[in-house]
Length: 352
Ligand SMILES: Cc1ncc(COP(=O)(O)O)c(C=O)c1O
Image (cartoon, rainbow, N blue to C red; front, top):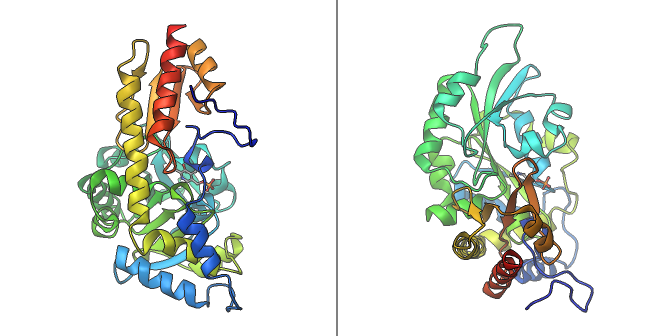
């Protein structure tokens, strides 16, 4: 049985988060490749110029890319650039901007979030209709954008048609559409579609493109798909403390991911590992897979004592303390052996 305690002091690969994964070797190589000579700072370098072309290949000729350090920054700066001082943003209750960004959208961007309960992390036109209200009422923060996450925090994936329907409903109300794409590559892999099909072509205005979970050292990007949707993005990135001086190192990583098919290979593999895990665990008495496994995340309910013992062997989080639901995230760098070892440990703990 594989033990998570390695002799070199490093923990074994686990299932807590794709943020705990390693950096893909091609990304490290890309960093080394641009580590020569001096380049203009703050995005005026030749590497960032290349990234602009690469992003346009993925997202269309109007796409403007703004590399940033992290996902919270991408989300907050994007939403701020899409909003007024009196704006509100409608998002699923489970949205990372609502649950896991320490209120940054409220504090830093000064926005009111309107969290919407959803069964599966997906917003719908009907929910938007119910929660985006008070237009023109001076007593109410004005709903000016919706934020959807693809793939969602609950492991589900919107179809392009579902996104187009939400976008149409938002646009009809004069609202803009933001996508938190921290795991956008996993969604593209799941749908077997180019990212453009469910972003630019579906009416998304601004995308927070996720790189870190899919193999980068650090680095995400704001991708403005509709230039008319934002104001002052370049300035807001600076005031939001997301403007990198040595930007070529962010851009080089994003190019390593996106110029070829590394983004897709990594995401396909992560999704396949999630399916493998769900297949193995789902068949075990005492384990219930409680949400559809559409991308790289598996949610399960199992006896609390089993979860506790298993966690001593492999890292993972409890998602819901109340129900005991746990979350197993599959990263791009997991191997089939890692998944099989985890499943075997689960079976062992269940039996004794
Ligand atoms: C859905 C989602 N959005 C955004 C983020 C970005 O977070 P961070 O600011 O830690 O990069 C995360 C990270 O866990 C996430 O899961």
